[in-house]
Amino acid sequence: MFAVSASSLMRPVETWLYPASLGLYCEPGDFYIDPPRPVDRALITHGHSDHARSGHAHVLATAETIDIMKVRYGANCAGDFQAAELGHTHTINGVSVRFVPAGHILGSAQIMLEYDGRRAVVSGDYKRATDPTCRPFELVPCDVFVTEATFALPVFRHERADSEARRLIQSIARNPERTHLLGVYGLGKCQRMIALLRAEGYDAPIWLHGALVGLTALYQNLGIDLGDCRPASTAADADLIGALVMCPPSALMDRWSRRMGEDPVRVFASGWMRVRGRARQRGVELPLIVSDHADWPELLDTIVETGAEDVWVTHGRDDALVHQLSLMGRRARALALVGYDDDAE
Image (cartoon, rainbow, N blue to C red; front, top):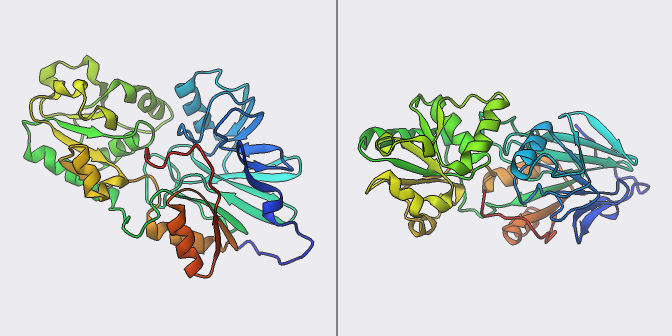
C-alpha cells in the first residue's frame, strides 16, 4: 500500500495542483484535467461532454476516450491526441501521471499524479458496481482524493443493475402489445443497459433512436457485444409495437415518440429515478434505478479506502459530502469547479 509520509520537505499537493479559471490545473506539469474550455494541454478522464471538450491543442486520454471524442466532435477535434495505456506511467515535466480504471463508462479513467513525494488521484466520475461494458474501478491509495458528488445524499442507494434489467424484461413479457420506450443517456448508459439485458437473456432486436446509433456502433466496433441493435428509422411502425426502443430522455415525450403507438410504456434508467417526483415529471411509468455513478455508501467507502488525508469535492452535492466527511474526522473541501453537469449522467 502507498505509504503517506509526513516529511516536511514535501510540498503540499495544493501548492502544485489547484482549481483555476480553466479547471483543475497541475502547475509543474503545465496541464489541466477535464478543462471546460480549450487549453494547450488537457488530460481527459472520460468522454462525457462535461469532461471532454473539443478544441484543445494536445490531449492525453485512453484510446477509447479518444475514439469517443472523435465520434462526438469529429476526427480533428484536437490538435493532436496521445493514447494513455491504463497502468502505464507517463512523466510530464517531472510529474508522474498514470491512468487507472474508473468503472464509469468505456475508457473512463482516474488520473493519478505523483510529484515531490505526494500523490493525488483525480477520479473523474466513477462507480463501484459491475458494468459489462467497461473495466472495473481500481482503488488507488493516495494523499489527496478528488471525488465527484453527483449522488452525495443519504437517500441515494442504487439498486442492482441486473435486477433492474430483469424488471424491464418482465414488463415486456407482461405487456406484449405495448412498446417499451426506454430513455437512456447516449454514452455509457445506453450501451450498459443493452449489455445488461443481453446478459439476462433478452435476445430480440433493440431499436435505437438516431442519436444513440453512432456511439453504440463504436462500442460494438471496440469489441463490446451488444447483439442485434437497429436504427428505429429503418423500422416499419408495426415492427415497433411490442418491441424495446431506446432513446435519449428528451425524446420520451416528444413528437418522435408518437411512432410507438397510443400507449407505450415509458421507462427511464437513471440514478435520479430514486426520486419519485422526477419520474412523475417525466411521465415515467417504469423507473429503473440504474446509475453510472457511485451512490452515497460507495462514495464514503471509497474515500475511506483510499486513505486520503484530504478530500476535494468537484461537483454535485458537495456540501452534504463535505459535512459528512467532517463528521468522520476527515479534511474535505469543495472546489467549486464550473462546467460539470451532475444531472445528465
